[in-house]
Image 1 (cartoon, helix red, strand yellow):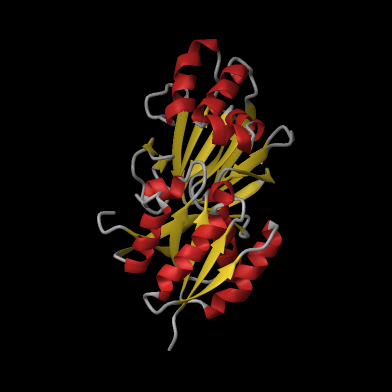
Image 2 (cartoon, rainbow, N blue to C red):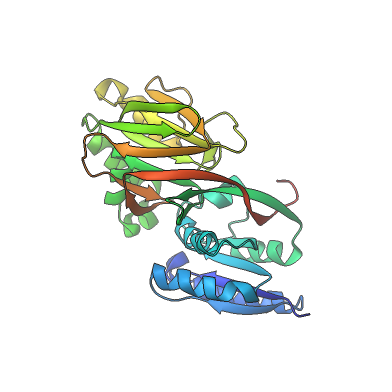
Length: 297
């Protein structure tokens, strides 16, 4: 029986080099007697439909791109209620998932890892409103607004400095909103929220910011930021380190419904891209897929 890997890629990832890497991966896999099918199409809905249509023919799915590209693929798996082994060739700006699982960021090394398949790691994700995957993070609030302001060209040219510049401009602005967090097993809490970060693991962007909580999502809420908190705020914007801030409320949960009490429109970002508006419902799905990782993970 022949083995076929799908290779899904974002044609814009890696400054347009993803297509070249996709063909390199196909050639490398062919040497291991693995057939491949290249999967790419413009537009997220069409990409999700393409992956869902192709999944029954595949033994594994290789994803080339950043966290946003990975999110598209995982959303397709979620909607299809499918499970398949995943390989990642990181070509994004942040690459949260790749950093968390110590995946090589050099394309040639990532391809070699996938061909060798040294180990598999079961990975959990979040389901947002039962239809949208959250692979690494969901955010909303002031810092999410900062991310919305930063253009892709700025990220590619200035990296984290682009976020730091926007962070300085926002410091002192009071945009805290009353947000209701309804937990399945722990009741409901309404908390003043200036920024909310929800992650599938204890780390984000390669930085550990919370204690381990296997099988649960991590919620970190910045309650308010004023000028007296400017240095901790800038430190967070640069490093992602939340652990020592006195302005943080940290929670863990398996399920939560999040609502804007005031009715003001609040837009989330999922895995780095603008996404759904509140209200949303999040459910943690443990061991949702198997990721090809180095032996040391």
